[in-house]
Image (cartoon, rainbow, N blue to C red; front, side):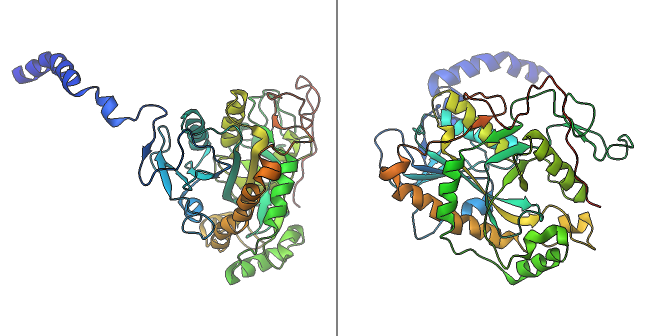
Amino acid sequence: MLLQHLLAFLAPSLQILYVVVFGSYLDLVTPAAGQPVTTSSKCTSNGPLQPKVFIIDMFEDEGDVWYNVPEFNLLACNITVPGFSPKFPDAHCTQDGSICQVVTGEAEINAASTISALVYSNIFNLKTTYFFIAGIAGVNPKVATIGDVTFAQYAVQVALQYEFDAREMPEDFPTGYVPQGSTAPGQYPQSIYGTEVFQLNSQLMNRAVGFAKNATLQDSTAAQQLRAIYAQDPAFHASSSTGPSIVTCDTATSDVYFTGDLLGEAFENTTTLFTNGQAVYCTTQQEDNGTLEALLRTTLAGLTDFSRVILMRTASDFDRPHQGQTAADNLFGDTPGFEPAVKNIYLAGVKVVEGIVNGWNESFEAGIKPTGYIGDILGSLGGTPGFRPGSASKRRSYPLSKRV
């Protein structure tokens, strides 16, 4: 006990002595904001790096597919950025810094935190950079199928709602999800947070789709077999395709990794409701609205350009079971679409990256001007979002689709 009191008494003095001799402990273990720590050869840049394209991936498999490819070497320059995920502390760039990549970590918090750290690090000048979100996703079999490469104009935060446990919801409710500020499913939300819907540059999306269509996509026998099972259901006509293709359709963001007919239908309806019928729910993932909110805020700060965002998701698994399958089996069973989906990130994505870099002087440096609205549900970047119906002070109802 006496020893403990003595140590407690001496601790402040010892700490002061340590700082005087060695400097702040935090200075030793934490890089100063904006000061990169290179972990391999340095980029050939005298100032902040100015990437033409910044690839955004979310976890290991998505990130790894870009390494050791013949078109460019993303591992030529690796920079530790303060504020990145502890699992993925580095940004990776080509030697000249024209193409870079970040792996954010999964779910909305990781995505938003990492992208914010990236932009505010002062390591990069990102004012003319194209941000290329490139990951896998679950897929709605009514719209697309496993292996497909999808490009989205809308991202909808479908789980940002009130929620009842389905066992306790009112008997006349088709779902336990109710838009915030409303009193029943199908009513337009009366409480808007601002991240519910983002609309991207459709002109840029169309250019990216054109590049991606030059790719030869990957498929597998197992994926073909599962696709054929889904195609037996007339409602899932999209799965009757003979192989992966390029599809333009929209994405739903939810931290909860959901599965099943009921949730799939609920979020189809949410996508329709939140966008006034303009978006088509096609893929589901856990990050995109977080990423887009960070890019929107940094655009407001003059550090990025929200008109230069591309959202590509490849379909790895179905969001609901096929006939004769349970939701649990769909979630926990084999996912034969995973491998081709991951490979198609690179196969389609590299065409997009090369298209931007090769066409830089001709058109992409100046930017692809949007012809319609871009931004969030609040109109933060200016203009009026056409997907927001009327005044939020008026309750509006939309018919709910339900499978019979």
